[in-house]
Length: 261
Image 1: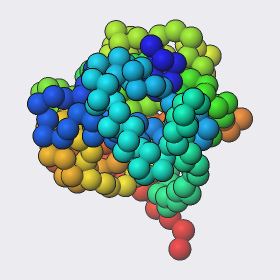
Image 2: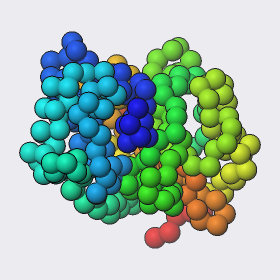
Image 3: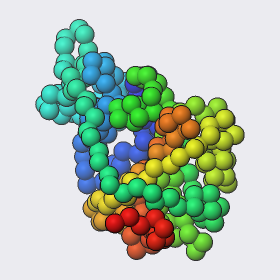
């Protein structure tokens, strides 16, 4: 399999193009590739796989792969040159994110032990550009990506988690991640989390979240981005959470000793 394909897409993603979906296959494929280009996973100047390699990697016809590449070229995200292949022309620029919410830590290990997790996907891939920067990775360097769904005691799915973690040598398997708390596995790998920052927000549920949480695409969801730091201030884990607003709430207790006028 082409290295660009194998480092950016998991086997689950490669096999997930839906023939029964109302959206044409070429457009589903184009969307996956476009998102990887826009978020910096496929950097400027990278040579794209050939149409034949894309067709084999995604298990689609060459015509489907060609139409997807035609869409990318039409948006000037890639450029085709006879005899030289297709290269990414889009320049990724990270956006500045501001979040005023601080000091809102939940009992992470307690929550991890009192709820059940199902791992949907786990493997080493090249992260999007902004995550590469946050984690201090070199261009093209891989990190562990884990996609999970968390369930309450009654078996109701209430959270979708996507995390990126570099430096993991062992323990990031489906079996271990479903029975253990991720922070404990990080510690086993010599990664000591000293501080955690969380940013809370809201957004429309993307299709992959809505599908797992029993919602409609575009429904409002509670979002949380969590970064874990070492004592030296290095980011060692980034977690993106989507919560079903009718099945999950955040509670925040404030002491008057913390109040400042």
